Amino acid sequence: MKQTVFGGVEFGGTKVVCAVATSPDHILEESTYPTSTPDETIPCILQFFVDQQIKTGKLAALGIASFGPLDLKPHSPSFGQIISTPKKVWEGIDIIHPFQNAFNIPVYLDTDVNGAALGEWLIGSARGLSTILYMTVGTGIGMGAIISGKFLHGFNHPEYGHIRIPHNLEQDPFTGSCPYHGDCLEGLASGSAMQMRWSLQPEKLPNDHQAWELEAQYLAYAITNLILSFSPERIILGGGIMHHLGLVEKIKQGTTKLINGYENLTEKEINQMIVEPLLGNRAGVCGAIGFAMQVYAQSLSN
Image (cartoon, rainbow, N blue to C red):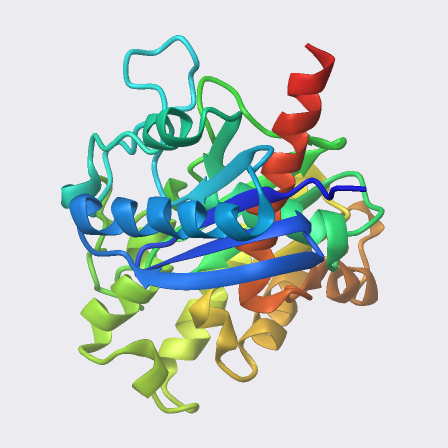
């Protein structure tokens, strides 16, 4: 029996991961390209899938998990475009229709963090749960949410990196790195903010540098807000900043202190709720394959 093959694309700020697979846990081929300009990057992705279809046959559907913000409103004139992004060369770029036009298959687009959330929900650390959140802390900060088994969408998609958190200017006089909001969460706690504040790339900051206590404090504020807003069964912390040794433990300790026993949440329960991604850096591309499978199933039922 001929296998059904799906395509997945994870558009990241620095690299793009492309894959063909029969399921999120059975990837047949994978390739990575730098996120340079649209004119350079999109043709590389298209060619990858052209080449793979020679090997596997026609793709059934394609899922795209992308950095944003994105316009996900189907009736909007800019549907499928990247909007208001700090990566100005990508602002206004349509990342759905080039693939629909090239392959004439269903294409589903959502945020990179929703892709990572789906990957972890399908085959990772959130398997079998109903309400889970995935927060990534890297160059920027984003949050993907699956609530009662469905993605959280409203007028568009969540932009959790831009919430406001307490900022003690005596403790931290840094005014923030966000070009839109200054000292929002992303403006205070993203990798870009850390580099701007300390004049060093985060991975070069020593373990005993005060930066890590401050980072844990800001992220504990954010995660406390997540717990009290969404009552999640699991919060998965991904992104490059989370690779720093001991940071996740500091965040758990800070969150436990801020929750302060409210709703009878114990330290043990909080420790079990806040986890690192089981899939590591592969969560996004696995979720993109999951997107493709979902949109393909919808196309069959229509």
